[in-house]
Image 1 (spheres, rainbow, N blue to C red):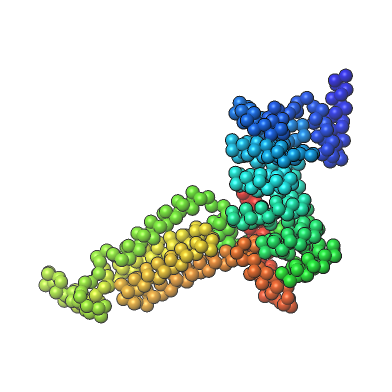
Image 2 (image 1 turned 90 degrees about the horizontal axis):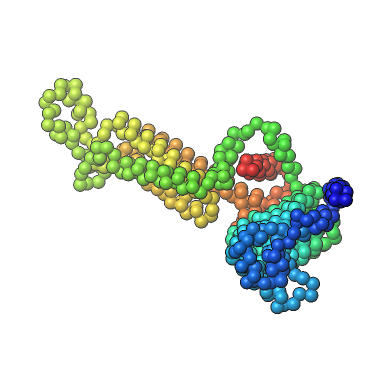
Length: 491
């Protein structure tokens, strides 16, 4: 009898698997004796806070155990029952907050359809728990359902406008607005869903924070969805803010075609900068910065106090000092050595004592070390707008160093050429650094450059097609694919 029952369950499970019937799967799970609710589930459902805390202390494993419905105790504490009274809701909220105080990671427990308690808090529009969950476990905002939907997707899809505003406020304050650009299994961002469901207020709040012309799996932009639905007011609003149809967008090179190509001349340095931005650990950054700062300090000090020091005097840099009388044993030299010394009889106050040949060897190596360490600091420092004040300070430090080298070398042609090369190298690296940050901000929709993205969008799509616009668009697409490939290396 039992074997026949197990066989029937197995066949039913295979049928549900072929049909993709999730409800049938959970019906079968409820019939299995191995899947049982724990007492903690019942305490959380009833809002018995003291009992739940005591039980969790005795059996911590109960807190992450799923019942036959695929729900954890925290899920049940968040979910609302039919005809639930306000007093009961308050007790369950209290229980939920008590559970996350004991273990904040409970917010990330994935239950049925890979939904977490945070997702349920959004769906229930429980603003109190939603705010507490976000603050207790910030990483939970990145958790996705089995349809790759974030909490923002659920808030927009379920028309939970208050929950959406709480999420948006928290993301803005934590500088995590990249979550707004997440795509679900259909390639839809929150903006696509807001346009499809005709939520104009949500569209207005998202328009400056996401990529307006992002394509979903159908190849539609938000403007295409508004046009298909006949939402004229949303369509005009999107068009005014730079939204376009998929037919007017520049054609993009496919990722598999990009991977077939040989790496370009500029791809390796761009790849290195992307590695520095995304993949270098904080510990490695700190180690490199410490060593680079030590090198910059040592080389700068060596330029101010070279071996042998400087010719001394009490006048300006035009004052001459005699070197002939400084030698006590000049009579021992022959006529040839005397003429050679006479050729270098006078030196300018403030210039180095060592010979020009020794000075070039010493200061050349010292300057290469200084410039290399400075460039490394420029590359390793995070690409943030407020960090660029440090970049500016490093530029002024480099200016003072090279100016000092030029003065103590006597303004020779060789020194000037060396200084020009050093300046070109540093400025080239810094320009590339600035470009990478601005390009990343435009094409990844940084929160502080939405207006620049809109401006770039209007310029690209309003002017007639030309080789320059096509080249820029092609390069931007390759830059994004290079970043995508770099991101895949982490997985």
